[in-house]
Length: 154
Image (cartoon, rainbow, N blue to C red; front, side, top):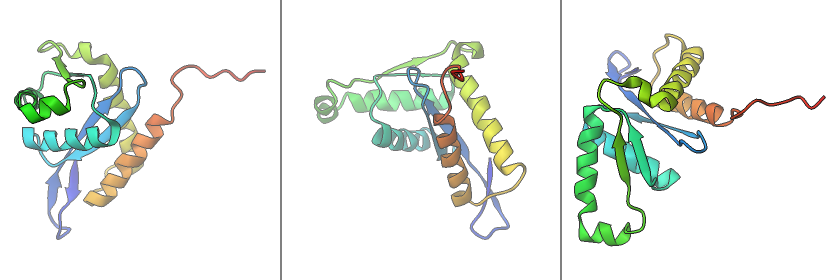
């Protein structure tokens, strides 16, 4: 997505990082300024600070995720980190290359997020803070949805 720059005449490109729980189907959205491993790691740290450290992570086969996974694995080798997170070791799994149908759960969430954002902002260009507000409201709406069919009880 593009957001208005500081002087309102330029545009900056940002990405949305989507985390979803395979058990509860809860969604966590985060804006990242680039597709670098460092930007993803900062996003991952924000996610774990708010939601807790997951035991397993499943992601698509993007090069950004592979690089971040290596950095996290190197970090896990540190004695201080290992002692602190000995019980909470994170396992990172990747889908097969060129097999997008393996990630049906998170691909469906991507579609839901895109639809929600498009209906909210259309083609408007927002500032970073306005986009952050829309992203958080989208997260709230998706997390409030029912997970199964709701009966009327008549």
